[in-house]
Length: 251
Length: 255
Image: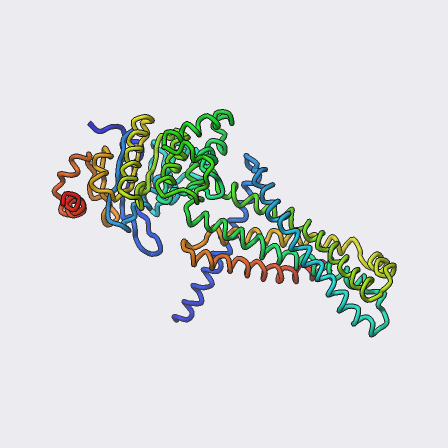
């Protein structure tokens, strides 16, 4: 049985710098589960994520979040919808003028979601959860890649979002650290039950991490299936993309 | 045909950029009147644009006043009117050199830093991150810088005027032997409120130009280190040129 749909993309088209990137993307994101979008580099996976959170607007088509079309909302309504979201950027995008504690506290303080005494309670708690318990006073420049991702994850989770977007959460990390980040995402998903949308190249790891897998190819969604079924798809383009890393891992 | 097309494309791009710049300014201003008021950010920017520029502005002012006195002395002496040296120094500084030179120094010191800071935040996705948190990046980053520049630049110009006239006094009276009384009294009789007022008006508009141009160039930087370098250069050059051009037109209106 298909779960309820929280985000629906209908015929999304986007041209960047004269190059068509998305050529009619139709995609349904199930609520409360993790959906991973895979596909060759340069296919516009990050562009797709940016459409989902309204950082980019489609040239044509609709992006519906809980039935509201992001393509037609103005700034203030968009900000209302964004309160449901958090995003973990590829580079973690920590504010480099603030230390880790201030970074994680930033969305809470700026949006006045909770009182300052609660900030002092929630932030260390969240840092402890992602394994950065003693790193609150450090600045982003002093952190390793993995620590930055953890801090970014803490900043995303601290507002208890309904939906979290992950833009290549493990790119640039060593395999052990990548595994640790994946485990962290899984355990956080179990705890908080958010809807996760991830862009990743980590085949085969993403199959055990995701509930759903979708493949973006030539600016369209080529296939979207439950994770285990996706691995059995016979489409040659899918097979080509997922079998090489699988074979490499096996050898 | 190709030449005409190329010229047309250039003109359209140019008009588009002007439109984008105007919209950027209007939207940044609009956010000033919507809650929350970013008071802490404004104070931080006042410290950066204003307080931290005081030393370099005073240094520039001191030597400008000194060299004006020196030059003015040798020119005026030919006509035997060294007594007017004070008013020559004060009027040049209050009406022209104070607003223009102080603004150029602020452009070089604070304007370039604005472009670089905002540009790096753009390239490293920090601005996107802020937007995804439902925090308006214009309100958080740009509006405080514009407000701070509008307040700081006139104050820095006032400081420039005082230090510049003081520098002129040191050279004229202490080094060249002009009488102190005539230095000050010529200033008192020549400088009118209109001169001071015009200088302040100029400096407010220069403050707007600096923050507007420098923030815009950083906010819409190309996504590379080279692109950011270009953006910073363009910001400083454009702001400086606009200050000088606008200064001419404003002077012709005010006179």
